[in-house]
Length: 434
Image 1 (cartoon, one colour):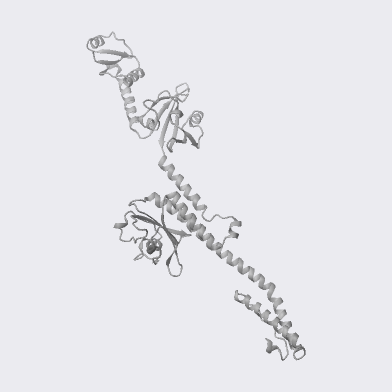
Image 2 (cartoon, helix red, strand yellow):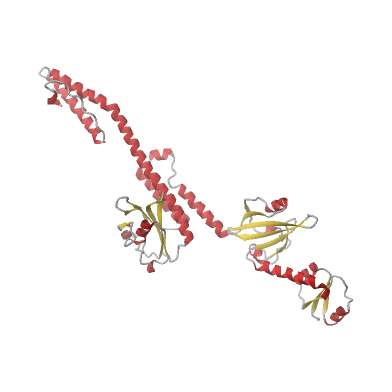
C-alpha cells in the first residue's frame, strides 16, 4: 500500500502537476477546507501533509489550532465544547477523567457524562445564564465520589450573533470545598458547646454544665477530627498554674502533672500558655520541648484558649502516628479553641450570675425577715422586763421565744447577712436577757 498524504488545497484541484506527481508515489487524500483537514488528522493516520506555498498562511493557522489543542490537552482544568443542545463536541483528557466515560464523550450531553451531578449554586444553570448575559457564568457541582467542581461557561457567537457553541471550563475544588465544609462543621459544633435553653439552664447546676461542655468537646474532637487523645488545661490567674479541666486518653502521670504557664521546663503546654502561640510537634521523639502526654504519642498539636486577647488555657491533641497534623489542622483547632474559650466564659458568667441572683434573693429575704425579727426580740425583752418576778411560766416561754429568734438570726448571719441588733429597751432586766 502507498503511504497516505493529506493535501490541503483551498483553490485548485488535484489536477495540478505537482499533485499528479504526488499521486504516483502516495495515496493522496485532498481536502479543500481547514476544518475537514483537522477532522481527518484527528481521526486518521497520514504519513505527511502537503500544503501549497500559496496556502502557507492557512497552514500556519492550522498549526496554531493544533498547538492550542495540545495546550488544552495538557492543562490541569477540564475543557468541554458543547453545542446549543449541550451535547459535547470536543473535550480534553482532564475533562474525561472527571467522568466514567470510556473513550470519547462526543455526542453525549454535558450533565449525563458527569454522573450523579448535583448543582450546588450559586447559579442554578450556568449555560442558560451565560447565553442570556452573553458572558461567563459559574456554579459549583457535586459529582459521584463526593467530588466537587466549579464550572465556568462561556458562550461563543458567530458574526450574525447566533449561538454556535459553549465552552465549559471545569476545575476540581474537592479539597478546598471539603476544607470549608469542615470549618463550617467545626464552627457549628463550637456554637453548640454552651447552647442551652433557659429551661435547661434553670435545671442544671454548675457541675452539670461543666460536664456537658466536656462531653461535647470530647464528642466533637472524635467525630470531626478523629482525635482520641485530648487535654484541656485552664490558667489560674494568680499563680499561672495550668489546672486540668479535661483529660481523654492521657496517661495518669501526664493527667496529674503539675504545669505552669512558663516558656521553660513546662513542656509544650506551658510554652503555648505563656506565649499564646500554637505549637505543632511533627515528631515527639525529636522535640526537646515535648513532655509525654499520651502513651506512645508520636505527634502533637497544642493551641491556646484565648478570650478577648487573654490566654485562659490550652487545648492539646496527640496522635500515635508521626506527622499526623498539618497547618490546616492547626487552623481547625484554633477555630474550635475560640469557641471553647467563649463557652468557658459563658459558664463562668452563668456561675457568677447564679451567685448574684442567690445573694439578691437572700438580701430580699433579709429585708423581709430582719425587721419583724428585730421587733419580736425587742418586744420579748420588754415583756420580760415587765413580767420579771410575776409569772414564771410566761417568763420561761418568752425566754424560749428569744432563744429561737436569736437562733434564726444566727442562721441568717451565717449566709452572709448582718441583721442590725434590736434597740435595747430601758429597764434593769434588759442586759440580763440580751
